[in-house]
Length: 403
Length: 120
Image 1 (cartoon, helix red, strand yellow):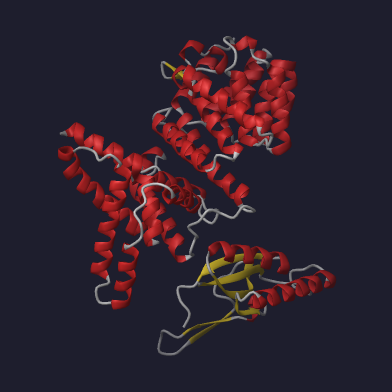
Image 2: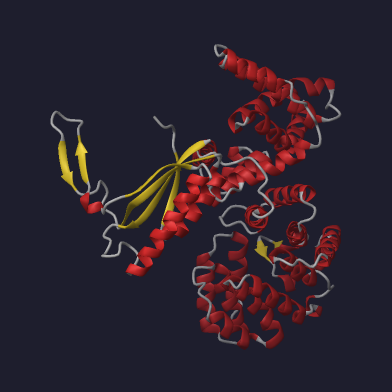
C-alpha cells in the first residue's frame, strides 16, 4: 500500500507543473490552482491504488482538479448570479490534455521567473509550481525554516496577483532577456545541487535532477533557442561527473577524478547537444560553458586536456560576459597553459575577496609555486569562505599536505 | 486594467536646478517628461500626474487625537524622497514596467511602480 502511495505521489509530482499551469490559465489564480491540484491528489490516492494509474495521468489530474476548482468557486460565489454564469461558461472550456497545456507551462515559468520578483522568490516559485516540490522540500534545499520559505512564496504570489504580473510568454523582442532570467533560475537551482552552499549534504542530487528535468521541459517548449540547449548540455556534462566528484566526503578536483566513474550516457548526450547548438552559430554564455565542459570530458586522462581550446573558449566568453568570475576560471586554464605564475598575476587583480573559489584558486597557485606560507593563509581564507563540507575537507587536506 | 502609481524618487534637498545639475539638463528633462506625458495621454494610459515641491515644504498632521498635531517636515527623514508621480491605467505589470522605464529615462530619476488596491 505504501508503495502504491509513493507511486501516486511520484506521478503527481511529475505531472504537477502541467496540471498547475493549465489550471492557472483557466482560473487565473495560482492559489485556486494549487488547492484544486491538492484535492485531485487526495482523490488519486483513494482511487488509483485500486483502479490503477490512468493512461494519461496528467489529463486525469487536470480534469479532476478543474472540477474541484469549479465546485469550490460555485460554492463561494453562489450568491452572484452573473459570476455563476461566467463559471459555467468556463466549464465549457475544452479539457485538452495536449497542445495548449505545453504553452501553459511556458507561460507559468515566465511568470515564476519575472524580473519584478526577488531572485530567491523566483527560484522558490519555479520549484514549487513547476517542479512540484513541497514548501518543506524547498525550505530544506535552501536551508531556511519552512515558515520563512512559506512566507517568501506567499509574498511572491500576492505580488503576482496585486501587481498583475502577466501570465504569458514575452513577445519576441523581450524574449532573449526574459529567457536569460529563466535560465539563470534553472542554473542557480542546478548549482545549489551541485555544490551546496550550506553545511548539510555537499551534493543535492534531487536539485540537480530537478534542474535538468525543468531545462528539458523548457527545451521541448522552445526548441529553437540554442542557449537552452547549451544550458542542458552544460548541466549534463557536469552532472555526469557527480559520482566521481566526491570521495570519502572530500571533493575530488577534475584532474584527480576517476574518469571511469563518469556517466558515459550523459556525456554522450551532452556532447551531442553541444554540437547541435554550436551548429546554429548563435553563441551564448551557456553554450560556451557547455563547450568548455565538452573539452574537459573529451579525454580519458586529465593531462590530455586541450587547454589552448579551453582558454580560447574563455576568451570568447569574456567578450560576452567580462565578469571577474569568468576571469577567475580563465586564469585556472591559463595556469595549465602558461604556468601558475602568469595565472596568479591575473587572479590577484580580481575583486573577489569574498568568494571561496578565488581563495581556493589562489591557494592552489601559491602551492604550485612553492610559496607555502602564503598558500596556507589562502587555504585558511578559502575554508572560512565556504560551508560545503566536501570542499572544506578537500581544502583541509591540501593545506595539510603543504611542506 | 489596473491602476499603478509611478513614483519618482529624487534627492530630499534639491539644488537650484532640482536634481539635474544645470539649467540646460533641467530643461531637457522637463521637455522629455512633457513628451512622455503627451504619449501617455495619446496611448490611453494617463490618469493623473504631478511634480511635488521639495520635502522641506511638507507638514505631517496627526488627527487621531483630540486636537490635530502638526509637525514640520516630511514623515520620514531620508536622503531620497518622492519628487513627483504618475498614476497610470495599464493592462498588466509588464506594460507598467515598460512605461516606468520610459518615464525614468525622461525625468532622469528612479521610478517605483506600485499597484493601487483600488481608486475611489
